[in-house]
Structures are given as structure tokens and as C-alpha cells.
Length: 395
Image 1 (cartoon, rainbow, N blue to C red):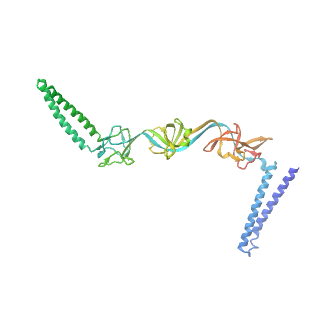
Image 2: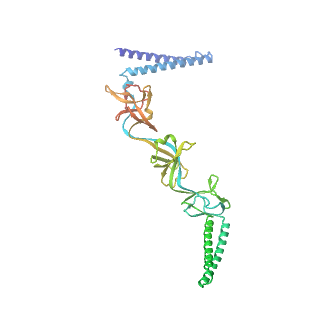
Image 3: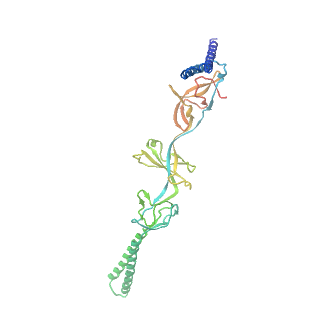
């Protein structure tokens, strides 16, 4: 009986408050013709007062509506607040370290002179050409080497003639063995010198060290070939058959990763995705970057290019039997973190707080390590204005 009287009283107050608000509004509308002679300042002041009174009445109306909703079990509002719930189940939860890397190749050759730097007399390649290991790429000036080689060959021809003559005499028992050995040694020494001169001459031939594509060609006929012009290679050949993703990992993650750790790699520009693992970790931490360089292999793909940007996700944690909820449903009060679940009391579905202990979070989800059980119905929509014990409905 007392509850009914209180409810009726609240409803009467609500009606009165609504009527008063309406009266204020009508007064503000109807007073325009009466106050035509009033000053503009007076009208503005009156308008501000009416707005302030209306805001106060709106607040009182909202408070009364909430109180009625809590005690009026027969009202339409208390058929239950509409919510959406998801039944808790166990599933695999993975946590990743999100970083950015770039594509590189295992076989990158920076071509340099095998001898001393020299002037380029001919180029046999252009940028983008595919070349084979040992293929001639350029020819350096070889005048000195050619003259030296020609002189030695002339000397060898003369020494061989002397040796033949001496050998003929020796066969006729003419001359000494020392003369024959001297002539033979002269021939052998010149042959050795010719071999060395031939090697020196061949060093003026610039050849590729690997199979691959000419990635950079910063060289023209007439320029001096030194291999590197400052920090820029004059000729760079890249073998893309063995590609890798190079990533700098901050040192605070080093305890969570190792060689063999799974890695997911996305190349947004090429619309490609690969699953790989860390194949190499440097042992030194960069003094300035405070990070360590890691590598992960990926298969050869024609649309993948050296230095292409890669989105790298290194899996540093996994739980194959985790309870996971959306991160947005997690709320906090003085007792800690909690979520709302649907419980049944006296045949009605109500909202019930459940304090939870959480673990890792990734993306839109968070791992719950305690407080929830398989089969619980976690409220995922409509939870924002719920209170403990509020009647809810899912349809």
C-alpha cells in the first residue's frame, strides 16, 4: 500500500512538473505581443530565465522517470531494457606486436673493381636488366695492361726460340746443361709473368657476382669506376629469389620473442599476406634506436620489391583456451573492473555485475582470466546505462 501511494505521488509530481514546464513555454510564446514596447535587453534576460527554469524542470522530470521505472513493476518501461548479449565460450586468443618493416634480399651485390679503380670504356647493361653470375657488365680502360701483356708475350716468344736452339745443341752434345736450364727457366718465368699480367688485365672486366637484376646503375662511359660514390653504389645487382622482411624490434619486447617466433606479414601496396617466423635476430642493440634487427623469410613474388613497406605482426602471446570479451564492455568502479551479465531472479532476467580479472588485450578484444565462466551471457549492447538488478530483455 505504501509503495502504491509513493508511486501515485511520484506520478502526480511528474504531471505537475510537466504542466509547469508547459506553462513556462506558453508564457514565453504569448508574451511577445505584450512586451513589444520592452527593451531588447529585457526580452533577452527573460528568455535566458525561461531556458534556465526549463532545464531544471527537465532534470526533475528525468529523475522522477528513473525513480518510477525502478519501483513501478507494472509499467510499460519495466518490461525490461532491451539489450544484446553474447554467450561466453573458450577460443584461441593471440596477442601481437605491431611494427613496420621493409623488404630486402639475401643476395644483394654491390659491384666494385677487382683491381684499382679505372675509367669506364664500355657498358654492357642498363638498369633493370637480368644478369647471370660472371656476366660482363662493363669494361675499364686496359691500355697499360694490354701493353704489358704484349711485351711479355714478345719476350716469351724470343725466350722459347732461345730454348729450342739450346735444346737442339744439347741433343747434339754441344753446350752445357747450365745453359739449357737457364734458357728453360727464362721461358717458365715469362709464362708466370704472363699469367699474372693476364689476371691484371682481366680485372678491367667488371662482372656480376650473382644472378639477379641490375637494381642501380649510377655510371656512365668515361667516368671512373670505384664501386661506391659516397654512400651510393655505382652498380647494384639484386637476386630476388630469396626475400626477407627486416624489422627493428624495440628492446622492451626482447624477452617475448626469439628465433622461430611466428610472424604475420602484410604488404598493403601489393595486397599480399604471408605467414612466416623470425629467422634471424641480431645480437647487438642499436645505441640510438634502442632496438634489435630481426629478419623473416618470404617467398619470391614478382610484385614484391626491395625496400617495400611491410606491416609486421609478431605473435608474442597465445592462449588456446581463453575467455574473450569486447574491450568496450569492460567498465571500472571502486572495486575494479567489471562487466554486466544476464542473470535470472524470480523468473525475470536482470543485469548483474561481475568483477573480472583481465589479461592481454589486442584489437577490439581483451582476455578475461577470472570472474567469467563458459555459458555466461555478457551484455555487449545497451550496457552503458544499466544498474545492478535492472530488468532486461533480449527481444
